[in-house]
Structure formats: structure tokens, C-alpha cells
Image 1 (tube, rainbow over the protein chains, first blue to last red):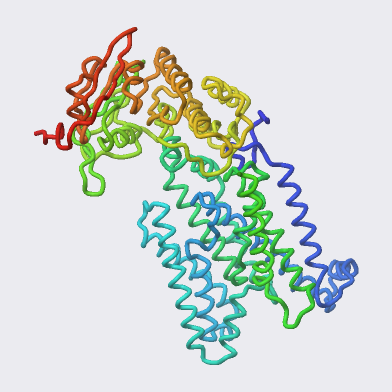
Image 2: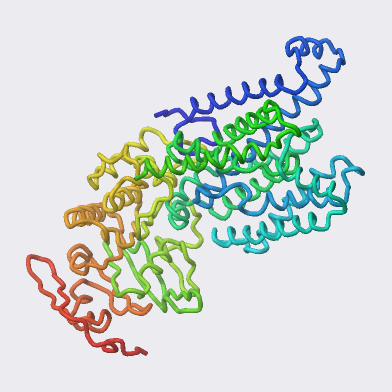
Length: 343
Length: 267
């Protein structure tokens, strides 16, 4: 047990999980390097790095600097957003089945992007897609609050999320139904499957600040999440301002997940599986789970994105397909495993 | 000296009047038992005293000042609230769970220190649960969990303890253990307000009783004044014998009165 005062902001009342966090950081860095090295076009990595260093604008250098690097950064950013938001939602709702999209943010961000695709606005303005996604996410948060009131109970929030999810799904289906051409419909479907292909630093510039802002809102909510283990009444009796904590967690999730979905489409199961995977390593304490979950999410999305490029099928596998195919059975295994241990 | 006082508290929930004009006073070192039949408003009153529910009219005073005006953290440092039931949402380690009780005493960015864990160990030890400290809470029996959660409530060293049936799921020995602990703390000037269903235990431990019925204080005061066969007939609707001996009162309910009896509307 450490007596010295820690500087780690998420430390709340946890012993510092330095070992775990460091291991995850190393994992993310290693996967980040692998993600830059691996791709359809074989690169002499160190040689190309030398070219970039020397300022030579060869094709290889361009691929590395303009395609591979932003893609790897985006994978880490999107994964971190989903992982942290999943841990935040599970902790806030005290429900291990909660995932980042439970309040309707993902579906609404997706809908925003689908509307842009439907009207073909991407041809007019290349960043219309992520911006519309962000707008969708923000509308979702405002609607959640309007639907459930400012001092809403957890149940009301979940039900408002169900309504919002259903409505966004309905409008997305409507867009598919009325799609002007089969090609447009296919474009929408493929975008919804989630991918990080052909992204640029412009996408990083859109997503990264919002994910950081969302993550910053989570800082200091660890105590509230921990206290919520004992129920809302006890948490409040311990002096926790639940209304403030709830606002920060929900708005933070909306910003981070909205930004992630806006640049990558919907990538399922990351926000659900990662917190489950890491929870036993932090003594099941929801406050301690936030930071490791962010790192674990980054690692998982990096790995899944590498898999989409390594598995040789045509057309390329979409990222969301890989995470769901691997994630769902793994999640099932995890549930059975945990149930057995708890019995 | 009055530490905690409810003044003419009334509250309606979901259109139903739960409490009407309820008053209660607890002195420093007092052990107040809240008793009354199901649905009489005991839990609601306790939540109002804990500052978790705002009454529609009336108010709660702590040390003579309005509880509503007290910052959340100050309130949390002064009083601990232990609700009914033993649900814990995550399979936490017992020691870490009890340490949650230290939250009000921590500065914003300070983690738990060695001294916090000494307090945690003391709280666990006081209910003979120190041997459970490394266990996962979901693997404990209901009674063990109840003791651990009681230790959580003590872990902030509260001046005021508000507990809702803290001994409901405990065996006989541990019921006495927990109530003895509350009594010892009250001897050291802690104020306890505890909801009881077992009237014999309430009679044995409490310095004062408040008997609630249909959201009103039916009777309040010394144990012998509140626990009378007449009061029990009119509130609980039972025919009961009270036998005193050995410095304590035993309440034995013989039979339930026919429905309608004792439930006469009061003005």
C-alpha cells in the first residue's frame, strides 16, 4: 500500500495499477508499430523511416506518413474512446451489459453520417461525414436529457437510450429503404460496418480533441463510480454529487464515442468486452477500470485493424465485422467463465 | 444536547402521503429506535434524516442548523447511512468495499493511506469480520455481508449513524454483537437512529423509541412509555404480552387481531 500522495488523476481511492497500466501502454505501442509496418503494400520500414527523416517524398514515405500513421493513431484513439466509455457506462449504470452506445450516442452519430451519405454530401465536402456524425451524437445527448429530465434516474436514462436507439435505427433503415441507388445503399451499409481504411490526419484532427475532452470529463469520477457499487443512496450519503458525476460521464461518453463513430463507423463489442476483460485485474473496482479500459480498447482496435489487413479476402474485411466476430463468442466465453468463478 | 432533529416533517411520494407532521429528536449519545408496522414510514423518515430526500414541508436540523444548507461532504463526514438489504453491485474485495466508507474523509485527489486501512481493519474487527477482509464480497453469506456493510458505515467514524434494520439478516449472536457495538459507540457520544423490527431487541438496546404508524408519530419517548400492549394493539394489530425481567423487556405477540381492529382512522 502506498502512503505517498499519487499524482495520477484517476487514482481516486485505488492503489495505483502501475504495472497493469505500463503493460497496456507497451502493448499499445507495440501494436501501433505493427500497424504501421503491416499493410497491403510491403514497405521496408526502417528504410522508409529514413526517407521521411531525410524529407524525401517517395511513394513509400507518403504511404507511411499519410496513410499508415494516421490510421494507427485513429485506431488507438477510437479504441481508447470505446474502452473508456464502456467502462464509464458499465460503472454508472452498474450493469455489466452496458456498452458505449446504450444511451443512443453511437446510433445517432451513425445516423448523422448516414444522412450525409444519403444526400451524397461527401462529394461536396470531404469532412461532412465526421462533422455530421458529431452533430448526431450531440443531438443524442440533448435528446437524452430532454427525454429523461435533468435529474433522471438510471432507469429513465436507459429507457430514453432504448427509444433513441430505436428511432435512429428506424431512420437509418428509412435511408436504406429510400436509397437513390443500390450503390448508395451499399455505401451506407459498408460505412456502418465500421472501418479505418483511407483515413487521414484530418480525421485525427477531428476525433482526437473531442476524445481527449471526453476523457478529461471522466477524470475525477472514479470515486463516484466506486461509491455507486453500494447504490445511489449510499453514494449520495458518502457526499458524492451524483448529478454532477452523471453529467460528466454521459457528456464525456457522448463526446468520445460520438467522435469515434464519426470517423470510423460503428465498431461493436470493444466497449463491452474490454471492461469485462480487465475488470478482474483491478479488483472489479469501477473507478480503477477507466484508464486500463481506455488502453485495452486502443490495443484491441489496433489489433483488429491489423487483422483486417492481414486476412487476405476481397473486398477487405470491415473493422466492425472483425471486432464483432471475435468479440461476441469471446464475450460468451467470458460470461460462462465468470459465472463459474462466482458460483 | 440535540444533535439531530426532524421538525414537523411531511412528505408525499407518488401522490401518497408517506409522512405527516413527524417530529423526532436525538441527543448526543442517544440510541433511538424507530419502530412501527410495515409501511408506517420508517425508511422514508430515515432517508429524510440522512438528507437523501427533501421533505415537502418541515425540515431537519443538525446541531441546530438546517441539514439542507450543509455541504454534501460535511454531511457525509458527520453521518453514515446504512440502508436495508445487502446488495453490492460488483464483486469487490471486502477490505476495499469497507474502505468506500472512507470517501468522505479523503481530499479530492488523495488516495487511501495506511491510516485509512487501519480504520477499516478496526471497523471490520468490531463486528468480528476481520478474517473476511481479503474475501470477495459476492462469496459471503448474507449475514457476513450485512456485517461487512455495517463495518463500511462505521469506517467514516460517524457522529451520527442512521441504520435501516442492520440486524435483520444476522444470527442471534451477531445481532447482539452489532447492537452492542452501536451501544458502545453511543456511550462514546455517537448518536444512533436505528430501524427495528424485533421489538424485544429495540427495548433492550434503545434509550428512546419512536413508534410510527401510517406516517405519523404514534408514540415517542422512553421504552416503557412507548411499548405498551395498548400501543401494539392499535399500531401492529396484535395482542401482545410485555414481560419485564433482568432489566429488559420481552415482547411476545400472541395473536393477530381481526382485520379492521386497531386501524380506526385517527383525526
